Length: 174
Length: 230
View (spheres, chains in turn brown, red):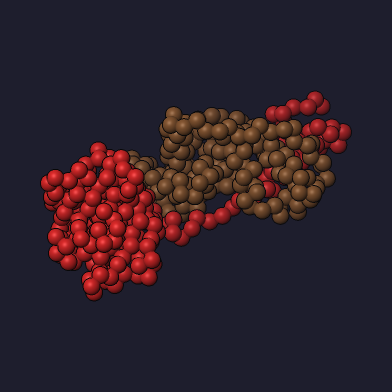
């Protein structure tokens, strides 16, 4: 293995879980998500010499987010995607819904609900909750202020909870 | 205290001072709207926590392999020659390697035959690796260098033959010879001790294909016909 390759892998592989998580929630397609992670690593490898060595995770995630956006733009030009179903007035959550109900919701259900959020809220949640970025780091990656990131995360959490509550009501759990 | 979205956001993000937090707590006792917002935020966090999941080992293998290929191409960029105009940068060509192909690609990396397109080199390496696996005999779906392809091994008269098919045309080795009089771009080539015969079908419903075997090249069209590939 070449020195450059070893150095690159040592610096970047610890962040693979974070990259996989971001890609998964940006694409919602296993194959595309894995392609996106791989392309991110290849781009990062070619640019590694110019990387200053700090904030490697944020650097990788920024590459990933940009690639995903490029890909989304290409797809948008090629096909007219069916818009997500508009939300029909989700019920106001009862404040006394117990945490255990939400903690027990199937991962696929949460993932599906997350995919229904506006992209800016979804990405902000993924960056802060799933990949552990600070609001400032997420703001740098997304090109917005940290307060904007926090606001998007908050609105995203609320909307996610509303979608899931509605599903749980429909299933008769709530 | 007036209701304020900005203050709520700061509260759920843990950014209020202890005094501000106490004041908001008191406000929440009397404001149903803000209390619901705080509960919803909390429940959203609880739900998102369900999504923590490590990357699969196969993804790590895939990343390692593609970086190894890219590192190799830094020294000696592979040459690609296709008839269908599907030219890509080496970076993109190196993208997307299926988990099943790692061992063979590892061999390809070490065998250093840069003139072969990666799809061809990978299939040749599969055959050179020895007796094909059960999975390969049953047929495997792979993505090699961004191209989806089906690969299957056959034993014909005690000689191993591996057939690759794809909806997209295959890039051909630099040494390949186009067969005259063919409207479907048939080609033949040698790669080490292996013979190759392929047919690229642009705009056809039938897939493009190529065969790799140690038998003489001129026998391969007949084998392709027997396998119903041409």
